[in-house]
Image (cartoon, rainbow over all chains, first blue to last red; front, side, top):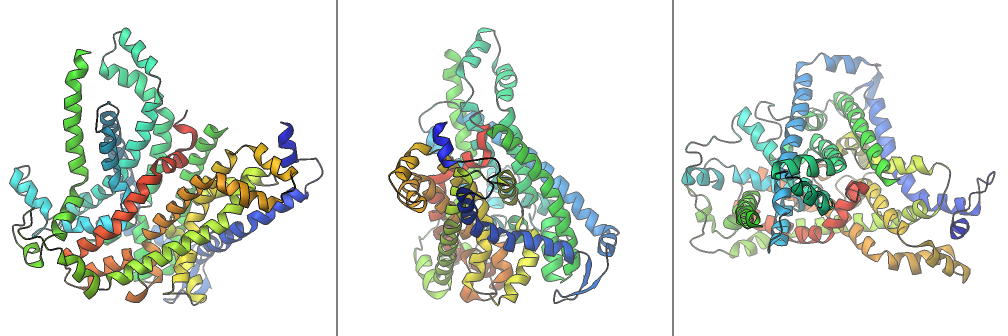
Length: 304
Length: 276
């Protein structure tokens, strides 16, 4: 503890010490940067959401909450909001289940396990925009190898034109999002499983618990924190997903694959309705802040 | 014991199925990039090329602007990485070694900010960058990309600095080193593995970035890979044999780099939860 005093002096009444001056000096560049390119833009968007805007993004007239009320009366907005919710819910649920199953598979010791683990990470390690482009080719109705393989192996004799109709397009796109998210879940669950003491499993086995019971009573409780933090983060990332949707379908066909994030982009940069883009960005900001707040509570609870 | 011998082969078979399932698009990529154009647009398609056409790589590189895209991506990613490191090292040091007024709040801000979606700020950033006359420039993209690497890198670096015992640094201070000297001569060398991780992270994040490039870059000349390939699909009748060849070259280095830092990355993201 004596060491700490030299490096971290905290005398009462000496707020502006040499040390804290130095600390502020060190923090200044990064903090100014964040203020200029993150905090100011957020404030700017909040202000813009209360103005009438021109196509050139000029703020014309202060209108208070009019933009908000107008948006809330639009049916398409609620459709997109609703889709954002079940997009996130469905994708996170499937990622969690797949991640858990694959982690259980990888938790068994055998030679070649490391190779399998590495191969499974690849969808996450790859560039999301480029993977999404590859998927549009995989889904190609005429020349795509997915439909060919499904037909040849007899898994699906008459596969759909994946990106052609609203329902199948939605599932095609959400699958790509899930596919990218599975490796993270797997890795985190695997790390969690490996930190559970082997003694617990042995004790359970002595008590006559079968594999399923050992999973429910030993593995799951041991993974509680990991599960919480992984699903929270995954919720955040899934809700934020822009690349897969924009690249694969651009929200179509007939707006059937838009979620809030892509809808903001389209309204702002294609329709040039800056004020509506800003209103939805503010709503996104509020939603993300809530999730981020929960996450940081969990994170800090574990840190200290 | 007997039971375990039955389980293992089952697990291995399922693992192989899962791996094939997850790598499916990459198999498609490899199949297509090796086919000559005449074999790509055949219905029904087939997996194994009849003639291996490595010329795709040469044609892609020389007849289309892919070389340009690679160069652009490299410049932007390198710039972002350098700027991020320069800003983050002192900040991370301050967060890990000093106690000061508002520290908790600041840490909290860094953690929360890294979770925001670029969509929240892209609208205002577009206005800022165009007012600075930096649309369609490398610098504009570098500035904007750094916003989203900054907080996570500071956060991770602070963790590495914290794990270095204070004593080492103190000895140097007593021997007459200045604070900046201790950072350059002691902290950075010891934290080098951590610094490598954050450097790779910034590089990858910037290499894979798409939304800002889509918004802030208009010309083919300044397009990074992600945007360049995206426009290649949209603008031309897509020549997938070239696109898959370019995609292959674009993702291989990124995947290798990612695998190098994957463990640290996961640890940084989930915090203490795994050790729990």
